[in-house]
Each structure stands twice: as C-alpha cells, then as structure tokens.
Amino acid sequence: MLGRIGDSPSFARRIRAINKFPLTAKGIDILQINLGSICNLSCRHCHVNAGPARSEIMSRPILAKCLEVLSSLPIATIDITGGSPEMNPHLEWFIHEAAGLNRRLIVRSNLTLLLDAPYRHFMDVFTQNKVEIVTSLPDYMEVKSDRQRGAGVFSRVIESLHELNLRGYGVAGSGMFIDIVHNPVGAYLPGSQAALEREYHARLLAEHGVHFNRLFCLTNLPVGRYLDYLIESDNLDDYLSTLCRSFNPAAVDNVMCRTTLSVGWDGSLYDCDFNQMLGLTVNHGAPKNIMTFDLEKLKNREIVINNHCYGCVAGSGSSCQGTTTGI
Ligand code: SF4
Ligand code: SF4
Image 1 (tube, protein in one colour):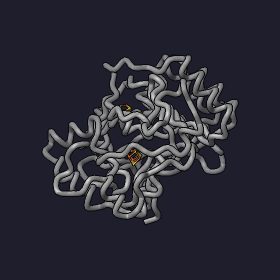
Image 2 (spheres, rainbow, N blue to C red):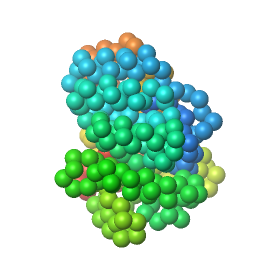
Image 3 (cartoon, rainbow, N blue to C red):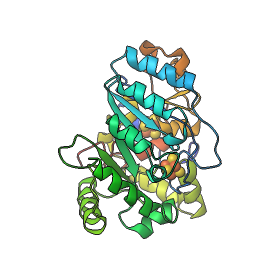
Image 4 (spheres, rainbow, N blue to C red):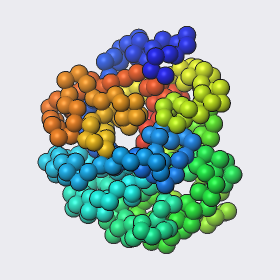
C-alpha cells in the first residue's frame, strides 16, 4: 500500500494540489494508548494484527509516563486500546489512576472477555470509574458479524451488552456511554452513519433487547489483517481505486492525527494507530518515544503520511470517532 496506488496520484501529491501539504497537527486533544497486541480474538478486519499468539504488552513504567504526561497537560481524552486492553495486567491500576485526572476516559473493548474470569471484574471497574466503552460490531446481523470476527462472538457481545445495560450503559440519562463501531464486512466503504445508527438501534433493540449510544462508521484501511484479506480475496486493486476515487477534500482538515497522539506498547509515538501498524513513528524532528515527550515539538508536528491515508478521507471521512464530515 505504501509503495503502490495504481494510476492514482500519491496521497501527498493529492493534498498538495489542494494546498493542504504538509499536513500538520493542531494540538493534542486525545492521547491514544495501545496497551498491547494480545487479544482473545483474531478478527478478519483487525488492522493491528492482534490475536492470542501476540505477546507485546505495555509495561508499567511506560503507563506511568503516560500518566505523568497527562497530569501535566490539559489533554481532554484518554483513549485506551489494544489488542484486548483487559489482557494487560496493569489496566485496572491504570484506570483508577487515569479516572482521578477527570478526563474523558475511553476503553476500546471487544466485550467478550467481560463474561469470563479472570476479566469479569472489569464490568465493575468500568462502571465505577465511568469509563466510556467503545466496542466493535461490524454488523447487526449475527451471521455477517461472525464471518468477520469468528463464530459465537456476536452472541457474546450481545450478552455483555445486556449486562452493561443493566449497569446503566447505553441508557438515556445515565451518563454511562457505550458506542459501537461499524466497519464494512467486505471491500467497500461504509454507508451513511446516521442511517446505519438508526438501523442498528432498531434491530438490536427489536431482536436482542439491547441499547447503546452512538454508532461510529470506520472505513477499513488497507493495513494489517485487512490488507491480507484484500490480497487473498483479489480485491486489493478495486478497493484502492475506490478509496482514491472517493477522495473528499473536506475531510482532510479533520483527519484524527491532527488532534491525536498514539502511544505504542513500547512507548513509541505515532500520528495514529494505522501508522503504528506500519511502523511509521512520528518524524520531522518530533521525539519518537513517550519517555522523551516534548510538547513543543509534538503539538504542531508534521504528520507522517502515505497512501493508506486515502482511507481517512474517502467519502464522509473516517476516524476512531466515526465520520469526520457532515456529508
Ligand atoms: S479487531 Fe479488536 S477484538 Fe478483533 S482481533 Fe483486533 S484488537 Fe482484537
Ligand atoms: S492514516 Fe493516520 S496519518 Fe494518515 S490521515 Fe489517517 S490518521 Fe492521519
């Protein structure tokens, strides 16, 4: 993906043509912390190649450094991701410490682990610390979702959602939020986020009796296991053409890297977790590890871009918080 894009211009050339090059950060509103690549699942769409066989895990000293940075700066959102964050033995401690900073605290959980020992207590940990949960559900139809994530995953997510609803998650007025990420189960762009959100709400309530808050549409970027899928299914060229053809200039200003800093399991710093997967650390003079954090050099850094970035500006735009334009 980094080296080839068929007949289309490179992403850098494309944004230069609309006077958006170089792409630069405009501050750090979100610190996204990747606790490691271990996961109990091996979803087909996983762009970080997480799975049970992985062993990378963020250590306590790096997590402590993240807390030090967060406590010294007004970064509004702490976004904890993985792999399965619950499989990092320091997660409970980190949540308690992070909750004390009074920021928006997000954990991206696949929910399936929350049903079993030794992870069940995270239902309480999340609830007591008012953690916002973001979870993936590629489709509201079990057969389609399980095709992407593995047999039986959908029903376990629904079971977990029931329990979380009982604790107030997704219930209007409770102040407890659970959002769902939708990404296409194939080589195409997501549909309208607003329409899909209505459909998800209606179908999940009618068929499974579960509530959630918002739906975020995420375009699959051609990296990690999703890239493997595109190659194996002979869809890579068509998908790249779709991304390039759907280039939306209005989405360029809102790409998430402009306000997010991503921390890898070993403390390495990235503009986003797609770059993390590709091994593209921050560059252009910015420090490459949280241990040498320097706000002045990071807050307006030049973003490291390549052709995978087409995925963030295709159609309505895509980010960890869903679409980025009102289209
Ligand atoms: S998509 Fe999420 S749940 Fe699935 S393998 Fe990757 S990290 Fe695990
Ligand atoms: S892939 Fe990463 S660096 Fe590229 S536009 Fe998207 S968020 Fe920014």
